[in-house]
Every structure is written in C-alpha cells, then in structure tokens.
Length: 299
Image (cartoon, rainbow, N blue to C red):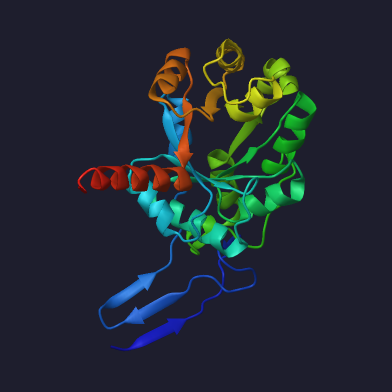
C-alpha cells in the first residue's frame, strides 16, 4: 500500500486545530481512496442535558493516568468526568490524554483547579477540557474573576491558544472554534464555605456561572459538623443552593455525599449535577466487595 501526505495552503480565515503555523488541509492518499481532514462539532452533552432539567452523573478522576479511564466511565454510563488538580498532582500529559479521550468517547471533561488564578484556568481549557470547577468561591467578585478567565470576549478575557485540540486536530476557522467552545464551556462554582453559602444568591446571579456545586465535605468541616452529611445544616444548605439556582436560572449540584438515601434527598430537593464518587473510591468499593464475597467462601 502506498501512502502520500500532501500539505496544502490554509484557506483564508482558517487555523489548524492542532498546531500553530502548520499548514492545514492535510490529506493522505492511499490506494483505497483519499481521507481529507474536516472540522467536527464539539458539544457539551452533559450541559445540554442539564439545561433540559435532566440530572447528570459526575465521576472524579484522582489516580488514573491514562485515557482508558474516560472509556471506562463512559461504559459505566457517567456523563461528566472531573480531573482533580486541587487534591492531586496529575502530570499535564495525563490530563491532556484523559480530556482528549473523554471528548472522543462522548463524556464531558472538566478540570477542578486548586484556586481561582487565571493562568491555570486558561491552561486547563487549552488541555481540551470543556469547563472548570473552581473551588472555594466565596462571593460575586470571585465568581466574576473566574468567569472572566474562562469566557471568550465579550463575556471575558479567555486567551485564544495557538491550537484547539478539542477538534481532533482537524481544520476549523478560528471564529468557528471559538463559537463552538464558547457554547460548550461549563463554569462550575464550588460553594463550600460559610461565606459562599451566605452569598449563594449573588454568586448565582453572575453571568457566565453555570453550576453552583455544594461541597458538603468542606462545608460540614467549616460549620463544625465534619462528616455529618445528614445534619440539618446540610439540608438547609442544599435548599439554599437550589433556591438561588432557580432564582437565577442556574444549575444546582452537590458532592461529598455517598449514601443512596442522601442522593434521594438531593434529587428530591432539585439537585441535578450529582458527584457520584471517584476512580479511587470505585476501585476500592468493587475490590472490597469482591474480596468480602470470596473470603466468605473460604472455610
């Protein structure tokens, strides 16, 4: 089989989605025919579901280092994977591979950041993520700074990188890429402090915030009830987040809960963005249950 690669000039107004300064329109001629590059649509299917009022299941990636975790979570019917860079230190190449694989298989990749700094937000979104999870959002000013870093003009000052890997290294106009990513990008504000809870309504009012995500673990610790996810304070916080979201047309979410009854209460209260666990917790639960089952068979 013969293989020929031809580099053609870039059409006016186009960019190569995978590399700056490289001529687009790469074609490969083989005896079976010609395969030409073309742009394809990038959609945030989880965000689409949420806007229709349908719950989504979220899994956190803490320890996996390959794109196979995206394939596994998709096979298990999750809608979103969140690469956790707040609590873990995944290398950049692993982050990029997981996010790219997630896009390929149709599960929404988000990156949870350690703080609100604009540089890491820009880098996360350039790694092929379709959004970010910002921790410890305490007030509307912080929310506005996060939105400013995550949204393209005129809604913010998000940088335009020299490549858009989200499109699978196909040719697409810069304007087309920005339009698609602007629609697909998801900004999640973590409400996990007393300040954030007190200011939930004003945070929800900030344009460009999509989800108010109640972090029950940190909030419980901050309120002096560490680990007590069934405490009335958590119930009241849940109602407050849902109310703020309904008032401003945003999406309420919750994490840190683990029991079926807790998820039932969250759904009944109106929560839609449901953090179900992490790769580590899933592995431990499955391995522990299998060991328990098999040990019971041993005399």
